[in-house]
Length: 164
Image 1 (cartoon, rainbow, N blue to C red):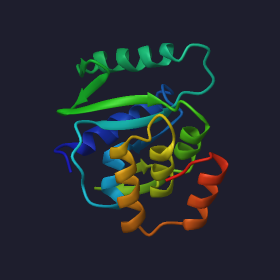
Image 2 (cartoon, rainbow, N blue to C red):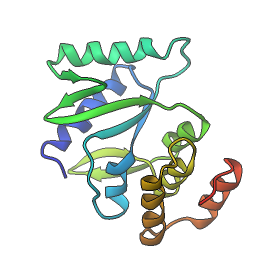
Image 3 (cartoon, rainbow, N blue to C red):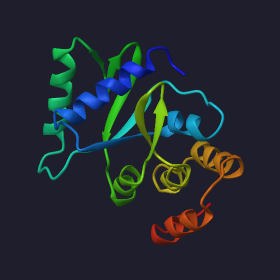
């Protein structure tokens, strides 16, 4: 795992305690690490629930202000926390919201960490426009290597009209 990953967990918890995010879940390639082998990735994707807002950019601006107050650098869409580029992404659709709401809480060095479950990761990677060849490969690898809830995955595929 990245050096100082615990610092990122503490920072995310602070965002939640301050009410800048309602909830979150680690997603993307980093989430796959918790269920399968590590795969190369540049950053840490964090799906966030911001609550009901008219302008999704207003809460994101507050997150960037929070980061600046803590001397975290911003690089493009990333906030760099302890040398880890973190991308906070508002959950864009019902599947993403459901993925955050049903995330698994795991222990990382004594800290609670919410991670998108493998079933939801697969579903997110099968959903257009995210369903690139590379992400479909990740989904297939995760399907073969993880102890999946196949009924949940089948339900997600049916409800969100997802195919391999």
